[in-house]
Length: 99
Image (cartoon, rainbow, N blue to C red; front, side, top):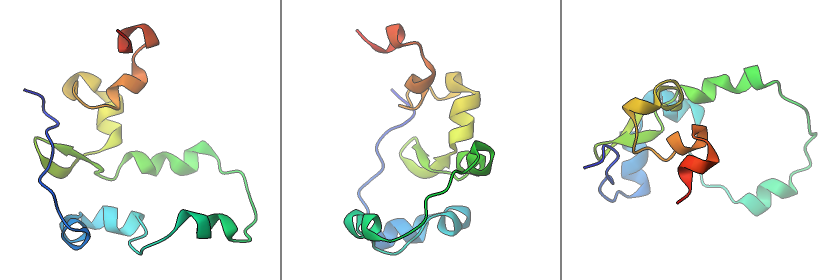
C-alpha cells in the first residue's frame, strides 16, 4: 500500500483550522477569484528564483492520509522516501514515467 493515501473529506473551515501556522502565514486564506486577480492593474516584475525557495518548506502534502505532513523539499531531496508522491515523477526521466 502507498504512503500517500487520501485524507478524509473536510470542509474549508476544518481544513484551515487543521493547517500548521507556517502554512497559514504563507497562504492567503481569503476567498478569491482568478478572473478578478487578472483584472488587477499591477506592475509585472521579475523575481529571482532564490526569492521563491521558501515555497519548498511549508508542509503542503499528506502522508498516510494525514494532511500537511510532507514538505516539497523532502520530496525533492529524497524521492525514494516518498515514492508514491506525484511530485517524484517531476524528477524522473520521461521514459520512466510513461508506459
